Length: 361
Image 1: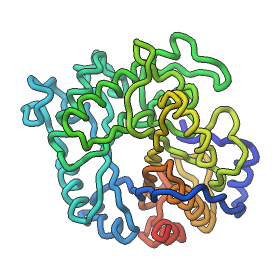
Image 2: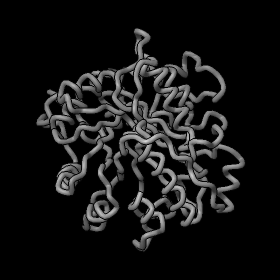
Image 3: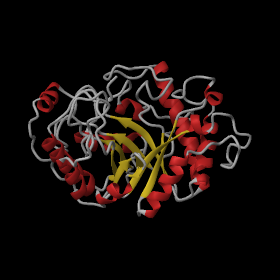
């Protein structure tokens, strides 16, 4: 299954014929969002951090898989020194390199070990939210300089999170479909408590939706509820706004419940209403964004490299001038076809026009 379904026939046609679209409409001025980048930290034995630094990256993003870090149940799960924990050396090195290059780090906690989810694949949620929360606490103690924590990635995709039951985009969720967001809400809230206990500096990023999904973003947000009916605690709302059209907050809403880059104002309103209880504004953490320039297996659209650069310029203009965006992260520095064509460098390491757009944005 592709990670992005086209928002509309018109948008798909525009992308497939490689048309240059109009510029994005700037949003109100505010604090500049952090400019992020997903790893890897090293390619072919060579550090990628000099390139990240040249791009002006301020935030390094990377996952931490609970299933492989704690394949065996720890006797003392809140203690990062427990012998069951096998902390990835790659993450240790990446955290150190980020600090040396003046970058913050955001870690995505994902995947549950079999001992926590009843022996199922790692995409299945743990049976007890407290087990995940204990892991989050241990991870924060292991990496005390990390203060941004994403809770699971794209849980609205059945490939990423279970027990997810697909829903029609225009209908309320039934009891079976509500089960997944309810369990996620409990996991998020429990992790929030323990991450704050580990350090008051920690910021917890929840939701973690993307453009489409087996459950649409608005449905997910509205059904993030604890057993007492209240929304889970979180500091920032995570979303991956993949888009087959030029980012422009003046664009018409996407169809069939999709939430792409142009829909961010609508997303912010849903988040505030359902998760902020209408009393506070919750900033958006745009964890992943990319624009492919070739056919790949991850996305069902691509554009000309010059269009990629134009869309990057327009997207960064929105993210960096609208106070509702806390951070925006690019995923895939390099093309690695056929998997991904959304890099800022081609397969030979040559910068695309998008490289310079990201650098200057």
